Amino acid sequence: MADDRVNLLGLPRTELEAFVAERLGAKPFRARQLMKWIYRRGAADFGAMTDLAKDFRAQLEGVSKIVVPEIMSEQRSSDGTIKWLLRMDQVQGIETVYIPEPDRGTLCISSQVGCAMDCSFCSTAQQGFNRNLSVAEIVGQVWLAHRELTAEGMETRTDGSTYGRKITNIVLMGMGEPLANYRNVVPAMRIFMDDLGYDLSRRRVTLSTSGLVPQIYKLAEECNVALAVSLHAPNDELRNELVPINRKHPIEELLKACWHYLNEQNGRSITFEYVMLDGVNDKPEHARQLARLLRGRPAKLNLIPFNIFPGTRYKRSPAAVIVRFRDILNENGVIATIRRTRGDDIDAACGQLAGKVTDRTSVRLGTRLNVAARPSSPVEAG
Ligand code: SAH
Image (cartoon, rainbow, N blue to C red; front, side):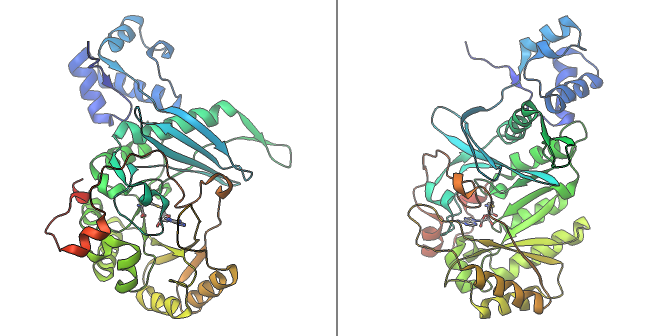
């Protein structure tokens, strides 16, 4: 018989309240108790929820379940970064990365199995695209990391004091284009910020996009999080080549959407990501062009040294070139920082997440956008 019990993991608060009321005749505070158990205490079975009456737990068991991801493998970097490969079904796997720093712990999560955006310098793009992750699968990554990190217990500082490793920031910078899975990403982010969920402030949840302009406008109305945008080039000609979605939504349109987003949300600034590709987008002239685009705007540039992966034709810009690039930006009034590479010894760095993906796309986005301008594209059906 098919198991039609509802997975409670990832149900937004209002839906969980409606569920316990309609299916179990319970008051809304029961939903709040459930959320605390699931997210704060990391419970995955109703038996552990000791402040709920036994027969209520039995009733719950009959109509619902808590399905969490399963770890296929775990790798640890010498710098403390942890990468998990998580099973999403019989075949597919996605990657989640935890990056510890002295003053914070960042969890980098995936939003899709693979990616359809076809950026030429990204390893995930080479895998192709299989499907969107559900809300439960997106929230499940945080649930799992939280459980694993809690199980590890305390770490000791050099002065002898102890601290628990925890998740203080969540970035949607793993596999996939989050705005192409809008429908599931937004409810997941609400749980990250819900005080009965992971209780993170809106500045500590960052969505990174390759530039799906219509969805940036939609997000501006519906959900308040920090926005990062993968720019990677200072002009359309070069960006068309590196980030094919640019052929549909060119830089000027993208930047307009960004400033609108900040206005609507009262945000401070947008982080623009810029991967440093040797001899491709790293010339002093590119830095000056970038400065002309962003000077006087609420923008920060984050320069990402390119991370190599098997089969890529690109190389990382030399360190001195990256420093010079940053200096030109700073001298021209644009705040730019260089992202420190983390976890590259376990292929956990930006753009290295490959997971296990069965490609189901028939034509690559870059190729398709070259052939004809279409009124609408399936990658945006979010
Ligand atoms: N699809 C979203 C989320 C991915 S975030 C986006 O494009 O923003 C991952 C960040 O790493 C993006 O800025 C991406 O462009 C960048 N990246 C991809 N491949 C990379 C590589 N090989 N080296 C360094 N950064 C890379």
